[in-house]
Length: 216
Image (cartoon, rainbow, N blue to C red; front, side, top):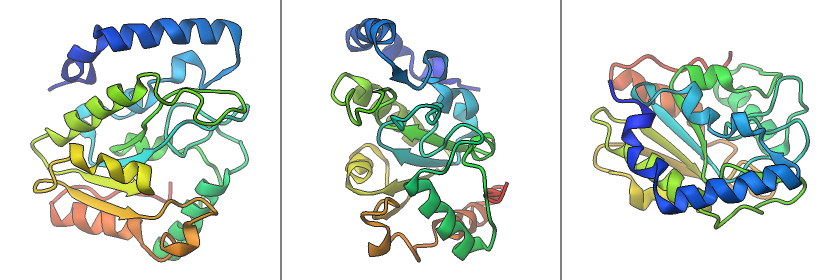
């Protein structure tokens, strides 16, 4: 049973990754960086490589206090819902008829949804501040590793930045669901009404896999 540690073994000691870690060590010492250091790789901790059935790709972590905890779109328990997640829940209610109050998506991760951002750290109050530091190389390797799985996976790509990652995915084997991003700037231009949750479960059932209980 392959583990993330093994499928990403070429990354951990790669020069770019060592340089990134060194740079981040300095940042965490001198600035407020999110998420907490121990939470940075939570997407991989909460969803084992063998268990990945769905990937929901985000950009970089939330940059407000108490929000990010290493899973795309998810916030720490009890934190007010950010606008994009609020829109995801509106579509969930419309699509599957269920209501979620809490923004902690660890229950989704436990069911095989890899909640991956393309950049895994950010400075407080400074969106995209760690873009181009090397995280993209690492998360591209994660996407390629998932694409190499024998069983098919559903990749959910919302918005243009996520959709640029299609080149890393074997589209003959895997399913890609794409729409505009759920942010308030674009949600009304095609995210609302796209029914991603029911599409995911219909395809999983077609493949003979356990559907996701998005309502818990």
